[in-house]
Length: 140
Image 1 (cartoon, one colour):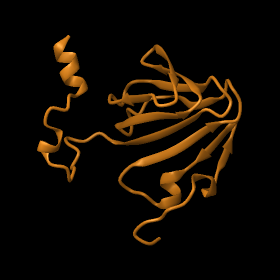
Image 2 (cartoon, helix red, strand yellow):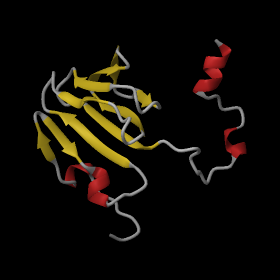
Image 3 (cartoon, one colour):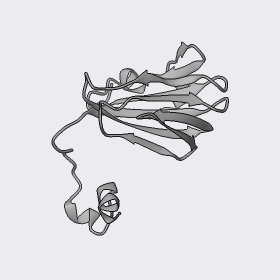
Image 4 (cartoon, one colour):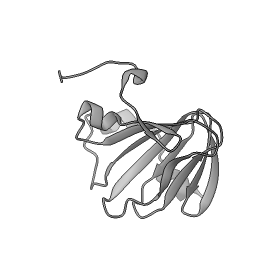
């Protein structure tokens, strides 16, 4: 692969798995810094993300609902998530699962091993005044 690629997601290969059209993005592009996959439900009631935790691999994961409605079960709590909702699971030991509530629901999953610190090219001043979840928790 060249240093980059641009292509419609529809052109990526799919793995059909029990009502899920799975696009293994990380595998296809040979990415090594993080995992990324797209899951699309063929019908309502389909399990998009199987019940699991990431304790063994120590992965933090973020799920972004791109289309439709999805029920996430995270740490024993249920959340109905519409398109545009982010589910961030920082603790690798937390169990999670996602079930499509609508046909065509799409979830993008991104994850990687937890680390001491993410090495960004952004400078701290780029985030001056931008709150974090920790700031919100401290204010409560």
